[in-house]
Image (cartoon, rainbow, N blue to C red; front, side, top):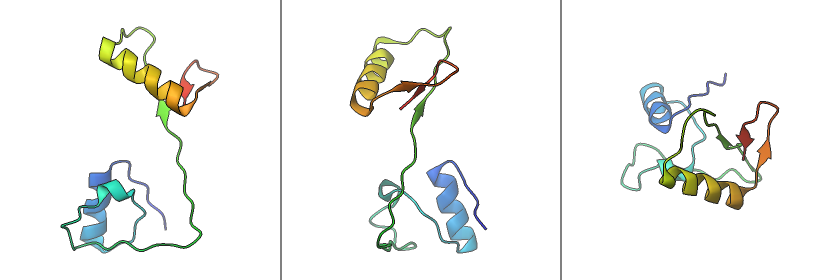
Amino acid sequence: MVIRLGHAASMLKAVRAHRWVTLLPTYVLDADDDSLRMIDVEGLDLHEPVVMVRRRDHVLSRFQEIAHERLTAALGSTTDNRGGNAV
């Protein structure tokens, strides 16, 4: 059975409460927390798309504009059929 939880805190809480196994990004793990252990899975190569969504009627702050421009430039961008950016 696979359950997908969208937020790292939710994943950690469920794993600890039910003694489940999970796949988490390494940045989620606290080096001082010994309740979980990391194992390497040889040959496992996981990727997940990053999607930027913004409302057309929302004006971005200067900071948001710069962040959007830099992320798009760094990661590349394609526009989906609804006008959104999939990065």
